[in-house]
Length: 333
Image 1 (cartoon, helix red, strand yellow):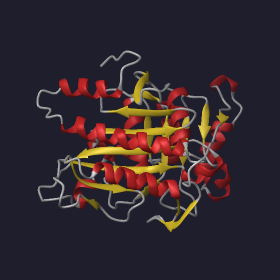
Image 2: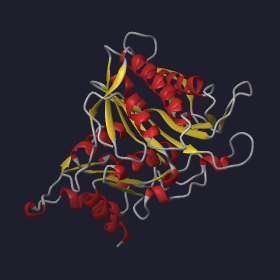
Image 3: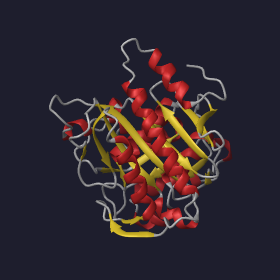
Image 4: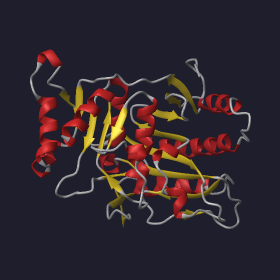
């Protein structure tokens, strides 16, 4: 659907709802409450240097990673704002080891929410852009409450996915399966306003994004992939420029707008990959595919992978379609 600059995210969601004759408004209501959560997180991220909310929380998450205070705040904010809506049967967070059940005093709904509450949180104290990533699915089990099967769905079942980047401005990038749109938060009116309609990633980019500090841990095929994009071949538009921030949302966002390849391959320290399938890879793969790009684990389309665990990790090659295809073909050769 064509949208005009200045459209609010609320209007876009309502327009999408009206296109579905059987829509009940449950998804729209669910998403509106999620937006409130994201605005609250944005406010606290922007005030992090002034409030007592930066630094270590003194706890670790299920990934055995040290949590930052903003990690905990963002996670608790999303849970507390979403659990009472009546539209979710359960949630799953990168920060929690198990399914987050809906308290018995609240009604249950027909959707599940999976999220990374604060991606790139290790960068908080040095003022590097960070973000929130999320995916929404329909409940597939017939039982009361959420079961593991409701969460272990392939990303192709996702009905909405997106992320928020908290940077020089706060921007929400969203797809409900009908294109990809970017909305910038206007602090004067407190609304996400359409600023980047119908985002399309270039078929081929000119940058690659990878943590080359891990080069010595990669296998030979992965090294060849990175070396290929670094090679001087003017006729083929190489070498690509190296751009790596170390915040997944930031690196992905740049490549989504300008084209390029982001890769986080396996290495000897992370033989199954580093990024989480449910909370990071799937939502971003959903976004990039609806923007005309691609995402694989080096062999398979990310959205085709059937998860086996809540916190399953995968390697990730994501970005411009031609660049991802080249990397994947080299890895499978």
